[in-house]
Each structure stands twice: as structure tokens, then as C-alpha cells.
Image 1 (tube, rainbow over the protein chains, first blue to last red):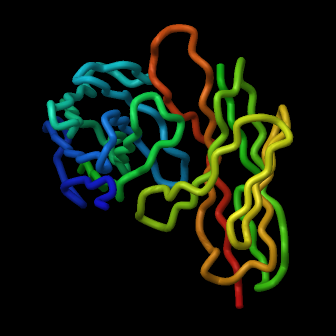
Image 2 (image 1 turned 90 degrees about the vertical axis):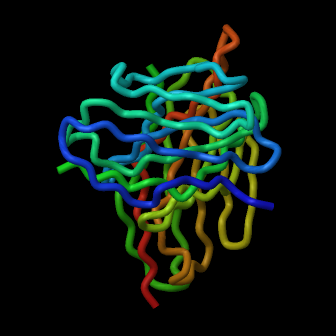
Amino acid sequence: DAGVTQSPTHLIKTRGQQVTLRCSPKSGHDTVSWYQQALGQGPQFIFQYYEEEERQRGNFPDRFSGHQFPNYSSELNVNALLLGDSALYLCASASGRAREQYFGPGTRLTVT
Amino acid sequence: EDQVTQSPEALRLQEGESSSLNCSYTVSGLRGLFWYRQDPGKGPEFLFTLYSAGEEKEKERLKATLTKKESFLHITAPKPEDSATYLCAVQEWENNNAGNMLTFGGGTRLMVKP
């Protein structure tokens, strides 16, 4: 049973560029959430997708956008990258509105 | 506004030395409290969900408990392989059909020395 997968594993971008991160949910899950985790801190909620729509959003600027595909996989896009966007980006999946969320290994983004 | 605070920030134990990690929270209505384990550079690994005050869950050397204001993660006779960051998160009941976001604390970094 495949768990949550994310790609790429690591990414280095220059300030001002745009980046796209990808996530495939755990088998049987249809809800995908994205979190940002700065070094030494707990994850912060970015947004959640269900039925291809953004269902809930955290306190992040519009530079952060996303998409969910019919197969439930998801993308996180970040425009006009800032140095402060350097972090571990985590994807979590769940079944419907089930309480438990299961996380992928994350994508380490470094902005220089 | 939801708030989750974990203490201590870091904890060093000798192998076999039992201890507890604390997670205090303030939410309007608790839908669930979650404990995760996170190894360096990896994603959080789900450990427990607690739903209501008085509930307890156990897994190997770990036991999680919940009151109306806080949760404890008790570690009995820890081993070096228990070294990791332990994260606590809460989920709040929503009045509308919104999602089920998690609000995390800052984590407790546990180091167990042989």
C-alpha cells in the first residue's frame, strides 16, 4: 500500500522564480493538504483541496496557489519566491473529512 | 485563535529514564488532538489521535493522555531509537463545511543517550 509521495525531494531556486511541487495521496484518500515547515518549527497549514476545490486556506499570501487533479493528486505553486520561502513543504492526505492526516516525506526548497 | 504550546523544547534522557512531554492547547471546540513523530529531514509519522478528555492511547513505550487543556506523551524506558521530534497538533470543529486543518505546536526534540 503506497503512502503519500512527493516530488521532487530537493529543489534550489533563485529569488523571484516560480516553483511547482507535486503530491500523490495515499491510496484511497481524496483530500490533500499542504504545510510549510521552517527549520526548528512546527508545520504551518497552507491550504487543503477536496473534490478539486480549495476547501480551506491558512494565512499565506496569494503567491501560494494550488490545484487538485481528478486522480486526487495535487500541486503547490509558489510565485515570486522570497528567501523566507525556504522550508520543508509537506503534503498530507486524508479520506474525506476523516480526522487523521498522513504525511509524505516532504520537499526541501532552498531559495538563494 | 487556536494556540498549541509544547514543552520542553528539548529533552535529553538516558536510556531507560522515563519522562513526559507536554502539549497545552486552547481551541473553541476540540475535534481531535494528534501526536506525530518526526525524524530529521522527513515527514511527520502519525502516532495517536485523542478525541475527548480522559482518553488514553498506547503504542509500545509511548502513552498519550488528554485533559480539557493539555495532553501528555509519556515515554517509558526509552531507547536511543526513540530519539526524534515529537509534534502535537489540534483540529477544531468547524461550523461550516470547511476542511480539517491541523494547528501544530513547535515540537519537543527528544534525545535518548545509550
